Amino acid sequence: MPVVREFTLPDLGEGLTGAEVVRWMVEVGEVIAVDQPVVEVETAKAVVEVPCPYGGVVTARYGEPGEEVAVGAPLVTVAVSPAAGAPSPSAEVERPLVGYGVAEPDKGGRRRRVGAPAIAPAPVPTAVAAPVAVVATAAPPAVAVAVAPVVVPVISPLVRRSAREHGIDLAALTGSGPDGLIMRADVERAIAALAPGGAPAAVPVSNGATAPAGAEVVPLRGLRRAVAEKLTRSHREIPAATCWVDADATELIALRRQLNATAGPKVSVLALLARICTVALARFPELNSSVTEDGSGILRHSAVHLGFAAQGERGLVVPVVRDAQRLSTEQLGAELARLTESARTGALTPAELTGGTFTLNNYGVFGVDGSTPILNHPEAAMLGVGRIVAKPWVHQGELAVREVTQLSFTFDHRVCDGGTAGGFLRFVADCVEQPGMLLRQL
Image 1 (cartoon, rainbow, N blue to C red):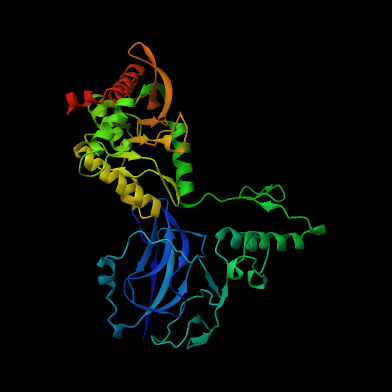
Image 2 (spheres, rainbow, N blue to C red):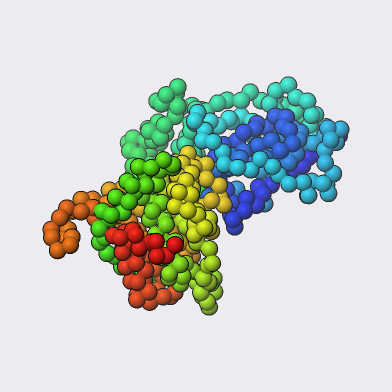
């Protein structure tokens, strides 16, 4: 007789309390193997596939794409046959899940099957000929009823949510997108048809009010919500101050050209700036620190875990180079390049996005000169680098055209005073202007 096992969303680490369902990888009634991925979820750190530790028939699944599932809440229930080698209850507790990792982006888009609802589980045979929905009846035995799945061509969870809030049947709509894909405009037209006079209906928001007609409410979910919460906390808790200086980067650019003229891996400007940061932090260790959770002390870190801003598929992320002070300039360049590529493809792991002690923010790649960044809580400092651009500059007493950049430095005023912060920034600027100074520190 099959035994129904409930699989809950496991603790995905890094203090995460929940995850958003991106897409289901199994259907109700489908036979799955032990440790087969059943759902793809998005956390505040990454998109991961979650494997189920049970093998058998999926009898129910919980949560629609776009919905949040808390850690410990049910994900699926599985009818496990003892004859198929189901683990004992004690073994189930100790057997670790395998297969965690960052999922490849779903190039074909997210599609949702409806018509096979998640219903209270009941024992079912382990062999099935087609996807079924398990129906619990008042009198045994339970009856398995085959349900023909209907594919609704819609990708966006926001489109589904909007349709659900306004009572729109997506299966009744004809999509205007490629291959009949249902777009937001299709749902908006259906909503407008329901409103008096054909006017767009007001959009409900979470506080019970309504947004203006035609406005779009974009929920803060996943990475965007995590970033919003972290920046809000940083702005609320850290008394941050910013100082800045213009620096002549001509010699730094010349040094990079010299290094890249020889055989071996190419060295980026970012790698040189990272090297300057590690040397500067060794000189000013109070800036490689954080204030304790209760605010009673300052934790000075012995290792420099260097975060840097990188643009990825999920938005701006901050990968971390571990023990940056131990790496050579070439090794720094290689690790920065690897993490940048992982950010671009969405392949960063949660561990690669956490644990930083200092952040280097090269916003010059966006073509801007300056910024006053918000600190990456709980870090105490961040160096910002603007674009390097040719400007008139007084060099050795004469006016010349030089490669100039603006450096900005934001710091937690609790860990140091302005003299220390100014000393750090001046040292960084001097190393940019005279890279040979680094030899004294290495």
